[in-house]
Length: 143
Figure 1: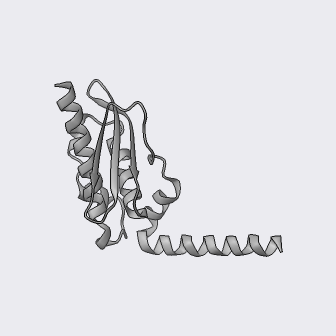
Figure 2: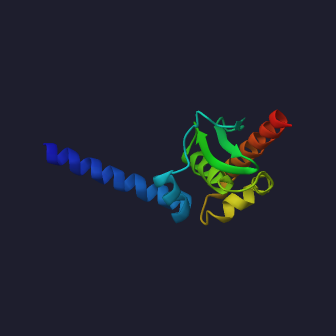
């Protein structure tokens, strides 16, 4: 019985992975699986938070030293597409200057995700909007 349940769980996971890979494309699927930049940050210098018309919320947390982003995380309470884009927005910001991070746009994210569903591109806009809002919050607080 235990072996049957293990096999069922493995089969179900393989099906979920195949469906996610077909939906998000290979690059999106790999980011969804490893999510290295997905999470919240307690000691962030700033945070940007936006809620999309789809109902998903994306937050981007930045830790800034001087003019450089030394730590970054994205978080979403939404679908896999929102999570992928939130994490990628944080990844693109990490190590950059504020000006470089401010230049990240939805197209910057989508170029890194070949095969990403076109009807989910609003998630990239939401993620970059949260990134820009975090930068604005930092500059407003610091200036």
